Length: 442
Image 1: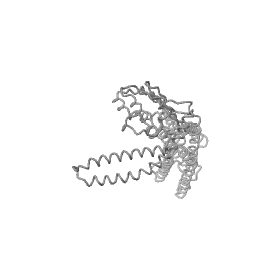
Image 2 (image 1 turned 180 degrees about the vertical axis):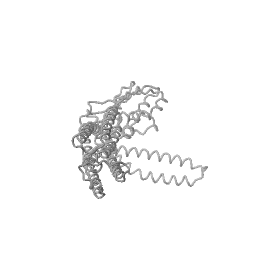
Image 3 (image 1 turned 90 degrees about the vertical axis):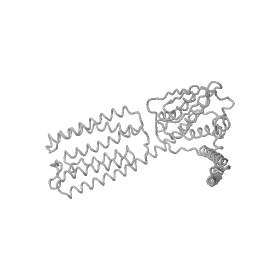
Image 4 (image 1 turned 135 degrees about the vertical axis):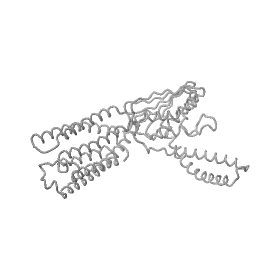
């Protein structure tokens, strides 16, 4: 699986790991002290205290980093870095306190389970394989005498030096790690799938709480019927268009560049392609699609959308006034689809201000359940008599050839597929405000 059930789940898991590491560092210090002073076992106490200090230092560093993180990827990077350093620290601890003969060797299993819970399948697998490589390298270097082996008196010397004992211990540990990895990944991914299903149900229930007028409910029913009809029409027209385009291409290729009919065929080809684009938009309107949704930063999605229209707005003497939170606003959505909706609405706003004006953009959080994209212009506005038709397919107030009338219909469908609502308020002669409200999701 490539997604986490919830970004908060990852953050909370990482924070829990930070707290647990404080206990681990204290445990290393106490265990080392007891081992040296009371059990009188031979361990490298200086090295063990140094590892405990190292644990404490990078724990503080990661805690500071996590508290300052604003992007969705930072907790993931922190989690991977922490688990790698935990495996490394455990390997060094074992080296200074008996190596393969130390009973705490099976703490590798605990770290493997944590990695499988917090990380994706491939990340956890790579971390476990790296840990196996670390452990194998340590055992091999100690065996050939490249680094000192700190013998624990609780293990008989003949066992500690036996190749059969070392291989058996190593084999059992590796098998245990791989089994723990497989079982934990299977359980975690099942849990994440259930969480995503619950999230979708929660969004659908949240949508029912969104204020919707009787007019909007009737509009959605009408659009649903039109969508089914459009799907059939688009399917029936698309195949003949493809055949026409193929034959036109063949005819053009068979003519000399100077042939008098060639320009007419080029025009036919362009118009067939334009018809194909309209059919493609009809199919998008008919199908919609909730697939491809993932947890992302809604604020960054709005910034990216603004970047796409910024130069065009400046060319049209439009001032873009944006109010976007600096912190991340997490929401589960299809970034490309929502960008398509935002850019379409913003371009409509720019078109409504031929003499220049102000395009205001804002991202709001409502009741910690919804996010709202609010797009306002100071243009000519929409007559009240036309507001009820604005989302109808092929309805447009633009001149012939300047639009297909599918932009807002598709936008409405995409927002609906996200269990959201799009509303338009307009005053003729003063401007228009479009509000896109989406459930935050998990």
